[in-house]
Image (cartoon, rainbow, N blue to C red):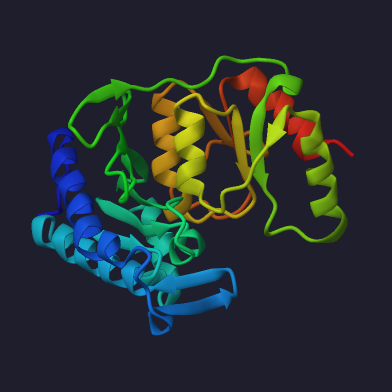
Length: 278
């Protein structure tokens, strides 16, 4: 019998995320030794003991409760990238980024979080972004809206920013993957906005855009653990996300870039004036 995820299971998923953060991430924050940090593909693409051990703990907990579920963890995918393709057809999958913003984490900056998405038959049905240091969480279930869950248990509905002119917008386009003239072009186009920012942490970017603190974010690199949870939370908060060609962003998509904005008109304006303008 295939594993089954029900709406009420979101509380159990959240507890698994919180437990891993409390036992593996928080105790290592600002306490990492040199041997606890390794490079992956570059000097800013890092992995720490906190990443590895928290992902391992969550993986074991998910499989204990939902045997047979597909686990798509950022660190495990380093050795088995083909598992991403299975997302489209999996009966149930948990997509984990144990420490999104690892560069910030190892530098002692509290701009990092755990991303967790639940995918059922190719559709994201739940998303969690958990701040391990403060203990706050954004959580969403498809069709049920998005909420800010404070560490004290208080729940507050969240809503995206109101649409406005580009010159009044605050946002960012992640250009780390771009080079040369293309990188300079996008950076130049961002000067059309009120303010641009960079956190090197997609979890925090989605947090800000879903809670209405900023207007748009865009990414060229599409890894499911970076985006699935945040996209669902933002959509449930009333926003619009699509790939640069206008098609929906779905589990398993790793090309095409994505743009997130308060509504369709804002999305089209940012695409035209920031992504496409030359």
